[in-house]
Image 1 (tube, helix red, strand yellow):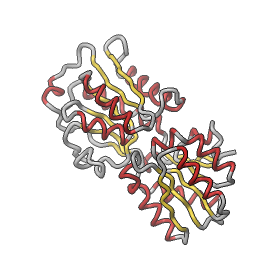
Image 2 (image 1 turned 180 degrees about the horizontal axis):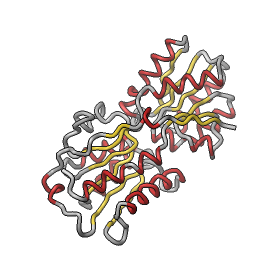
Image 3 (image 1 turned 135 degrees about the vertical axis):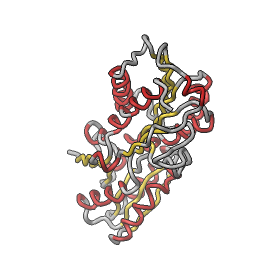
Length: 296
């Protein structure tokens, strides 16, 4: 049976003030009439967790008075953890000229930033918006982008603590990530993990993988060393490929920890520690509502 370690809300959610200065066209819009919302989700379209995240968000919007088919039109796309696909869909959604965009994930938000500096963007499931250049600062983001920080970089140090609790003999721990999709190309989370590992005499390993074949090579190699463990970085690419990682880790008897609760609950992963992404996505609804109603 797997173990879930749920983060306390104050440990991972930080809101950026929505009182940023939106472009004049956005501020001039009125709350009346049908509003158009562009949504680009990070997971695959058939992913149950991704569907649950979107459902929670639309329910929250409905509770605020925005009903699809009545006064709201939603254009939804799914990035599938692929930076190239995110860029294609971002361009497509911006061309539709929505009133607001909901952007899930770092690669998705980066894609939208390249496409528009005028349409208001509300991001969710982004960890380092300042470091990635999405906002100027947390209290006053500026520009056309605002949203929520998902988790602080120290989450990976805590993941290492929990991994060592269940596998106290580990001497080398690899952090698995895709530099093309991970925050800061992987540096945002890795630096705290590296510092925590060295302070406990554990060798930290940066395990970079951008394909199923690379993931298999890394996990299989780690599994041959009884003193190894694995931390999967919060990264949409890794989430899309997590079933393969879980299977490889189990086959290799490799202790591994993941940042997503559902992979323990329904996919057979050993251990997780991380935020409730459904709750974070849902919290984007009040921001969208405020912008629809002319927040400036």
